[in-house]
Image (tube, rainbow, N blue to C red):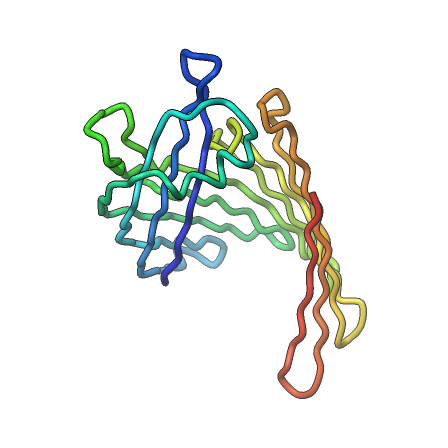
Length: 214
């Protein structure tokens, strides 16, 4: 597998008129292995090589959206590291429970400056979830961040829930929501709502559409 992630964040400094702007772009190339331990328990891991470009700088306080958009102009440094993601899933009749741990080794990435304080870390992220599949054609699921994570405007610990229902043989609809349980952070609860549908058309063609609000 391969994927690329970019995170731009603003954090306060000792000077209330200035902020620290960080940008971390990571490229992940991995191999995933999965093993069933029993009829009810499976574990998987993605072993991955991560290449990161990290940048950090002090900027005057202003429009937060404009500051985040300007993070790409910061000079960056490049670092590579080994990392892993781990997941466990258990089945109990109609209930599925899972736990995922991303960025197990919490790799560090150096910026263009020599200041150790500007080293950016890909923080460990742990999420637990549960789903119910006891009604034919219906799936209900929810998950929660176990740890706090750095968001673009403060820390986040997201709670998400949603469901999918097969209304007809060729039509399925789904909906869900997500919000930050740490409402006292600068970004607030930041609720997000989504709605989607899938339609099976001619032969093996599946048409999917979704909209996200918030």
